[in-house]
Amino acid sequence: MAEQQAKFVEGNLFRHVSVMALTSSVGLMAVFVVDLINMLYIAMLGQAELAAAIGYAGAILFFTTSFGIGMSIAVGALVARALGARDPASARARATTGLILGFVFGSVFAALVWLMLGPLVALLGATGRTAELAVDFLAIVIPSQPLLMVGMIGGAILRSHGDARAAMMATVWGALATAVLDPILIFGFRMELTGAAIGSVAARVVIAAMALRPIVKHYGGFDRPTPGQVVADMGPIWAIAVPAILTQVATPVGQAFITRATSSYGEAAVAGMAIAGRLTPVAFGVIFALSGAMGPIIGQNFGAGRMDRVRRAFLDGLIFTGLVIVAVSALLFLLRAPIADAFQAEGLTRDIVYLFCGPLALLWFFNGVIFVGNAVCNNLGRPFWSTMVNWGRHTLGTIPLALWLGGIWGAEGVLVGQALGGVVFGLAAAWLAMRAIAAPAVAPASSLRPAAPSAPEAESIASPGERRA
Image 1 (cartoon, rainbow, N blue to C red):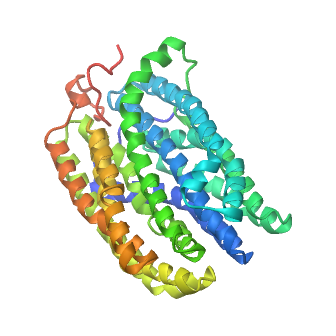
Image 2: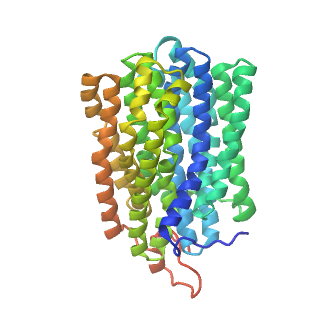
Image 3: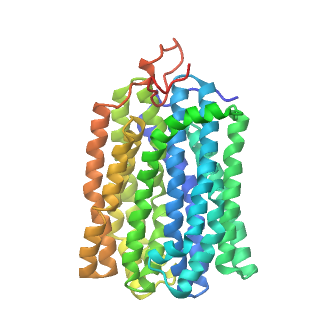
């Protein structure tokens, strides 16, 4: 069994942030690159309604994925707390319970979404043949949501152990499976959107299997929990999971509004938005990965009582974000024409792609600040602060500006309004993160258990009521 120690309480913090973010982002981007390739394949079919259907389906899948992200944040934080207290048995128990709860509630959630597919797609503004295609695609993919939950929670457990590479490889293998299957199914068997949907399901099966394998092989596997243990662990898990899920769900809710607002400008606008939506996680995968990547770093140092390193990690996260945004924005600007050509984008669709690859890319810095701030708040016992920031950003920071600027500049104004709202709430996230560092909601694990002479203190915090005897 791999040695279960905290590894971020020593060494250069900027290097830890960079390594964790980059390795985590490779896994994320592997999945999103396949989504981008799917979009290219669909564009090659030359049917505008197919591309629009992918855009509508993507908004709903973003919503379901956000539920899984919230659960994985909760389970990862609890496993990290146990490891920080040098209690591998408790870490294994929390991992087991979290996985069970994630699968069960993920199944219920998927069933509810599946039953409501028609109304949900209509709510986004899809009509006619486009709506039918989106529903058909989602009807195949949504039932695999519990498998995605297992894969995401497994990846969070691995990152809590500091094994970002294993978490990364789980999603890389899933992406490779899809990359092989998609052209065969879409073109070889002429299955079009149905083939893309089947490829997505296959990827989720592979991700789940490859995330669980290293946990069983290297980190003690899982327990056979009793009903009492599951019930006892539900409280601590939901204490973090509920605000974390609410935080994550805010993003697809805001994106759903943008999709709805853009749909009034026609399928060309929706297609442009869909391309931008597929480009975003590929271009900014490192930024998307920051919250989950920085969680163990923040948690381990807080658990060790090293508030100086917690503060430094937060600042290094902001510096890292700025460097990534400048580099990616420059690359997108230089490649804006080839990107638009690859998607056969013309007219309004091309204008939206150019806008995304220009000034809007730079404004993504403030979204990165929100991700870094969320990592701080979630691991210092202030998860509802993250919830407030995310909901504020995707409601007050999205709807008024998108409506106002949309009335002036059309579909492009909608996207500009959405981006500008991130500036205000990015600054708010930074302020709240500094407040959380100055006044954490719970005590460090090191203050609750005497430190062993030679073992490094570790990860996130454990409040007295959460620690096991």
